[in-house]
Image (tube, rainbow, N blue to C red; front, side, top):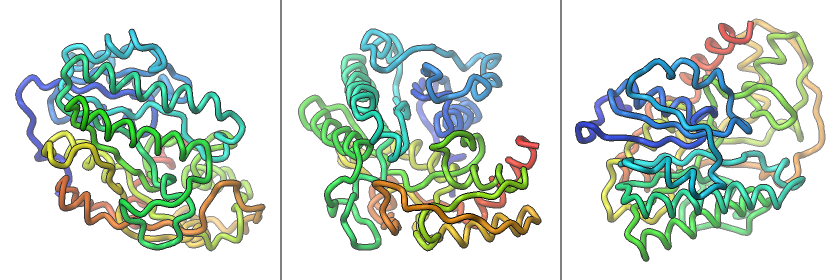
Length: 325
């Protein structure tokens, strides 16, 4: 189970973009533990310097401070690299409504720069972050690849365009691309601060500080919350996947469904708190329910997640108790 047993050719080199971010820094850490070389790329627009600090003294790690919107930077970052894990992007559905041009620039142009640089540098595998938001208004559960609706936000559109470019780059140029449609990832190092912070770390921080959290909507909306270890497994298994599995996107989740109000109650119990939340308006562009069918990733990538929501939330809560107090 997991990814600890995965093997790559000796001397393999990975590039992780967005390496100072939540998912990127966890990928860097995991690959270094497996004993391979890692190059990180980040411009610290959303990533944090403390997330890369611990790696700087490791001989197998090098870091480039740079922006994926610059093609020369992408070319330099891809030199001598075998596998690219492209996590650099701006997240948040609500924020994308405020700045659609910026999202186009970073998420579409930046990702295309990375694909082009990977192609020109003969990278073996290009694995990139997509999102469950590409399902848009498609009402059926569980969400299944090939059954998408109309996107509901600029952010979702950028991820849909990434997938179309990736399909083309595999078909036209032979670059093996694999899209990771993440479903509500959570875990250590996820930023609890700011208006657009993810809900789990935000709730944990507010409860630790005895603040009253606000739940958008009635709290009955549900998500397929996915612990970070499962996401690391999916990315690394995609690097080992066949050419036949390339040019496609995959649901990366655990395959469960938790409502926000249930999660909030679990967190209160875990932290020994009793704080009644406020309820606010629904968030623009949000869907009511989300749950993934992960059978395609299991079949074609060998993805076999073993971190349930319950196991992950215990680990995440412990990490925040140690690191936020």
